[in-house]
Length: 327
Ligand code: A3P
Image (cartoon, rainbow, N blue to C red; front, top):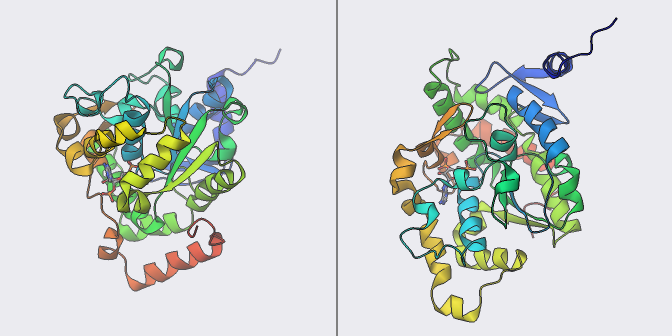
C-alpha cells in the first residue's frame, strides 16, 4: 500500500521541483508562485493562503523589503488606533515596541513555523493591522473578497537595493549558526537586477499593487517613500481618509497629526531603547537596530558605479511602463 505523504515530505518534494538560485542569507531562494522566496516563506505562504480569514476592517501594510515598511506600519498603527492610544502620551505602544511587533507579518511571523513570536490573528484587537511582502495576486482569497484595505509603500529600486544589501549582510553576520560569506555589492546587484531577491522580482511586486490601486482605489492605496518623506502630513491625511478615519478639524488644530509624525519619525524611532537594543524573536533573531540605518533618499549614489546605474535604469525602463513612477 502506498504511504500517504506527510506535510513535511510533501514540502520537501515540492521544494525539489522548484527552480532555485543562490540565496542572499540562505544557500538558496526558490521560485514559488512567481515569487522568489526563502525556504521557510514557501510553507508560510501556503498556510496563509489556506487559513487567513480577513475581516472587513482589517488593514494590510504591503511592501517590498526595505521600502519603508517599518515606518508605514508605525504611521498606520498610530493613525488607526489614535482613539485608543493618544500619540502624544508617553505610554504609547510605539515607544516600547518595534512596529513589526505591533503589526505582525503574515509570512514572517503569523504563519511561520515554530515562531516564538507567534500571534493568533483572531485574538488581535480590531482594527487588526498586518504586514506582508507577498505580491498582490498571491494574497489570500479572503483578502481579495473582503472590504479590508491595503496600503502599499514603494521606494525607488536604487535605494531599496542598497538598503537590502546592507540588511542582508547584517543578517548573515548575526546568524552565528551560518557559515555563508557576506555578499559583495557586485554579486548582490547582479541578483537584484535580475529580480532574484526575496519577494521579487521587484517590478512584479510593485506593478501588481500599482495596477490594483488603479483598478480598486478604495481597496489599495499606493504610496511612495519619497513622497511620504517630502510631505508626510499630506500623505498621512490621505492615508487616514483612505482608511475611513479622516482627521477632523479639531484633531488637526489640536496637533494630533504632528504628534503622529514626530512619534514615527526616523530620529525618534531610531533613538528608542527598544530599537537600539531590542530584538524580534523571529525564526532567526533580528536586531531592531537594523531596521534603522540612514532613512535618506539617494544614498545609492554613494555605491553605484556608472555601469550599475546604467544597468538598473535600463531594467526599470524595460519593466515599467512609466505608470508606477509618474502620477
Ligand atoms: P535605509 O537602509 O536606506 O536607511 P523596511 O522598514 O521596509 O525594512 O525599510 C528599511 C528602510 O527604511 C531603511 O532605509 C531605514 O533606515 C528606513 N526607515 C526606517 N524607519 C524609518 C522612518 N521612521 N522614517 C524614514 N525611513 C525609515
